[in-house]
Length: 483
Image (cartoon, rainbow, N blue to C red; front, side):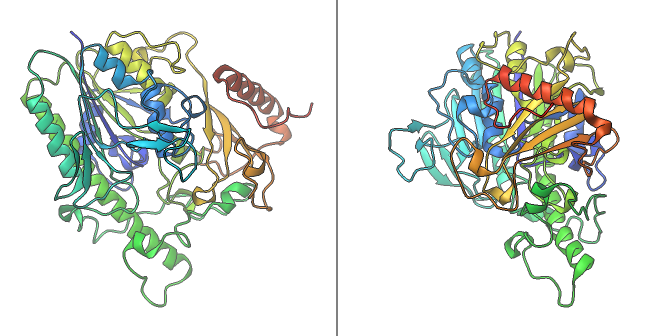
């Protein structure tokens, strides 16, 4: 019997804001239920820490330079290699509720004002029997939702609405024993962090502890120093919903901004946690839990004051790491942990194998099904490739790199040397490299590139980066390192 699949994805939910991942700042008892009944991945990562390209990779098992979704481009729905299309063709009932963020209607696939030019592509969700999606990021309160029948405003709070709609679809789905693939894609906890009424007073009388890298000075990391996503200086009044008390400055003012930001972020997380509990309860009550794969993940990680930041984009681990919890009682042992590497490139091949569908050869990821049941296949991956293309968002410089279990090599390249010919690079930044020892320096504070003690590791990482770029067909922009 083919398993049902419930794929729950939040937006910008960092693993270190989930209690089963050891959160110091909140509890997520309902999300934790998935880990208690299944497996928790500690080394799951995205290949581009930005919403749209990550979502495209999850559905296609392909990098952005293959799908054309590098930044905010739509996913061309004519592309055949998409997870939901393959599952639907194999007999699955399919539906998606929430954030799609891969385009809607006829959308241009390049940055042009003409949405009907030669690059225009259809971008409505396809492969779903039913869909109810947000336009763009959508609203937290009284959101507009787009369905095959058109647009309509729905009263209420977004996390509750999406859960209601998903449960209604489950209850009314065809009763012909077809398995289902249901995606519940939450808006929360995306900026600007507007909690629902029942969560507005959480943490009111608490002081959320600061992360240990809160006062990072970015020494030796010029791209980090240029990023405009600092807790103090880049959060806006609309982010924190007010003005700081008069007389605050320095560390006290920075802490005020952090407390206002992180509490609303965690309040939004609480609404997602409640939604997960309702969905799990339905599976139990409908006797569907045993043969249903339940996944909880996010489209990437997020900086929760780490390095003094909010947002994501960087290859640094707080942004790079994705939560990934999977429960499947028919196969996956309960309360287990897997430390081997998996990326969002592997999600689609993994779910296709569960469904008994061969992964198309165009997919660049590999199935992690064996990992999830506690096995590590011979010669399993020990590294993966990352590429972030956008230059404008929060002034985060474009970069690519390779991460292994123990080290990370990164190449930052300003816009004037990139694929799209943008020439507005900050003159303070030239192309350069970073290398981190993730064992000795897990917070990535010391750039060890060109340190003689890391010469051998550096050479190996360069070789691995070149190998991965060749394997995945991505064009390098760097010159070969000097001998």
